[in-house]
Amino acid sequence: MTAIETRRGVDGSSGTELAQRGQRRPLALLGVGVVALAVSCLVAVAVGQADIGLREVWTVVTDRLGLSFLRVDALGLGGTQVSQIDAAVLWNLRLPRALTAIMVGGGLAMVGAVMQTLMRNPMADPYLLGISSGASLGAVLVIVAGFGGGMVAVSGGAFLGALGSFLLVLTIAQTSGVIRPDRAILAGVAVGAFFAACTSFVIVWIADPHKTLGVQFWLSGSLAGARHDSVLIALLALLPAAAICWWASRALNAFAFGADAAASLGVEVNKIRWLLLVGCSLLTGVLVSVSGAIGFIGLLVPHAVRFLVGADHRYLLPASVLVGGLFLLWVDVAARSVFAPRELPVGVVTALIGVPVFVWQLRRRQRAA
Image (cartoon, rainbow, N blue to C red):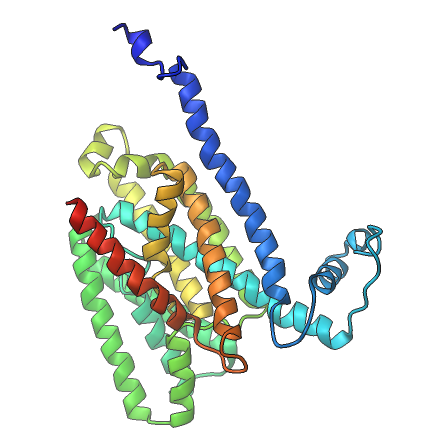
């Protein structure tokens, strides 16, 4: 068989044609994901205790964005009236919450995909380096110890705690400027346990039931406090981090075969690893600061996305952002709707979904091995 014949598929297609077909499928799935995310956002904003329809949602959004020519009545689809109270609920409460869910879910899923490749560990997630424990301690010090008040103060304390834990892990994990994945994982476990113990100590020492309730709700992960500033903070962190990760997507493809293989392909292993770890850790710290620690998204979503679009990080990373955002958006809808008027912390719902899926994934890997 000639070299040309070996590059042809069973239907006579050339290697170039086969490659184009392989690219069209993930691109089509990405397009479907964008549409599904946009539609889901509108539907999620309409869901709640107040009876507000999609027409009202579209009217409020187009009016506030200065796109009155896209209103329902301007398009000849009939008129609709929205009260000032409903408009305020939609614009100031539900829409920021939905957008924050998309940013947080998408960011955590993308970071999970990067960490699993960098560490060559399918069980790696965004909190592998103890960032969530550090953020929790920072938030608890603000809420319980009375260093400040409000969402901005809590977010600031959480970010500083996350940054401190990350710097401590890097100090332990690196040797002569080189980060070893095994040392990073062990350092993350140790630092995470230390900060978790400090958090428990602070809660027990203060012993204020009202503050403790707020702390527990935040530690479980919640989007109840999301406002427009939360969306802006998450967006400003997600965009540069996503750009860095996508820029390094070809290097990540090489990392999937090991650091030595990546180096043999011309990848500056230590430089890329430092850049991605710093970028992903800072992004995780910001996301945790606005939502609390929401688990299992960064662990499970990348595996599901690999099944859909493959392991090429050029498609895996944007698809992880879309699927992660879509997943957390609907989990948050369930958390605030299923037991209304009570609201569950969204982290509780992700754990209830994630643990069975994690066990199934683990058993499937054991059978495959």
